[in-house]
Image 1 (tube, one colour):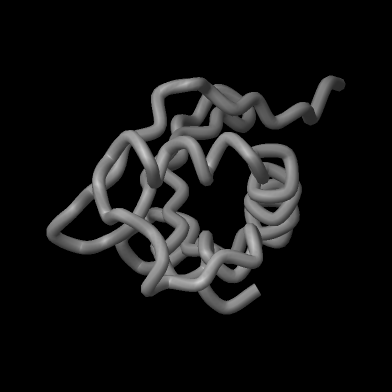
Image 2 (cartoon, one colour):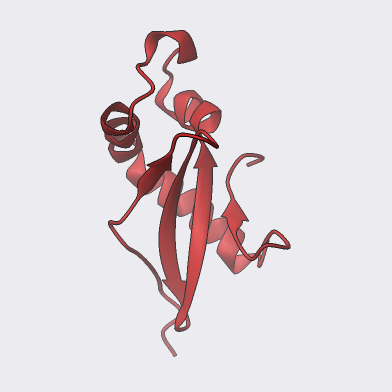
Length: 93
């Protein structure tokens, strides 16, 4: 049985919550994954103050570390580490 987790390319930046949301599919279930702007800056070794907080710039940073982010999300999904709202948050990993 194939247990692969598939990630889509439909990430979007939520300016109000300052987080990037993207989706994964596991065993036919669509899962929303979330990474905060601060965590994204940490992964890309960027200083928060030096980054323009617009969707284009944030999503470019996301692309730089996409595979790392997907690995972190995959680990949490396999551990079934879901928030009560059904989402996977990568803030604390």
